[in-house]
Length: 128
Ligand SMILES: CC(C)(COP(=O)(O)OP(=O)(O)OC[C@H]1O[C@@H](n2cnc3c(N)ncnc32)[C@H](O)[C@@H]1OP(=O)(O)O)[C@@H](O)C(=O)NCCC(=O)NCCS
Image 1: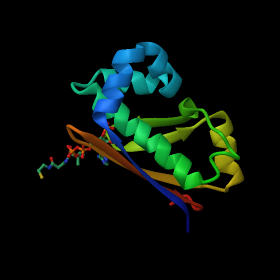
Image 2: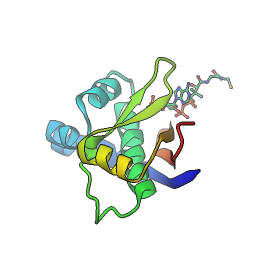
Image 3: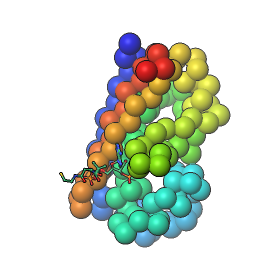
């Protein structure tokens, strides 16, 4: 059963400008070391950062109640499997909220182009 769904779209230039303006302090506030390593190793890093940020926002939307359950951005971590398929790992408060809401599986899909990044997240109560 679907427990929640969220979608988010980000303009790449906003991510590029934020990185340019605030650098590492911005990146480490939003992204984990693994997300930073993955994205900075790629040719168009802001696209990958933007897609990850969209995925984090999509998770928050899927959970609902963002005011009641504030989560740090780094507690929602976007990783890729060996084929490049994205997945989400939850940490600390985000993991507690996931358990509280009885979320079994989280499905995420992301896409990015020169100007936009988009992510869609679905929360399921079962494991498949
Ligand atoms: C995986 C694939 C579909 C990605 O599509 P794309 O148009 O190149 O790139 P998009 O911007 O839409 O999507 C990129 C995101 O897809 C996701 N992705 C990568 N591999 C994936 C996979 N195996 N399964 C699901 N999602 C995947 C990643 O999240 C990636 O973003 P990230 O690197 O920042 O994490 C594509 O690269 C691919 O391998 N296709 C295989 C078939 C093929 O080569 N077709 C070409 C002729 S039609």
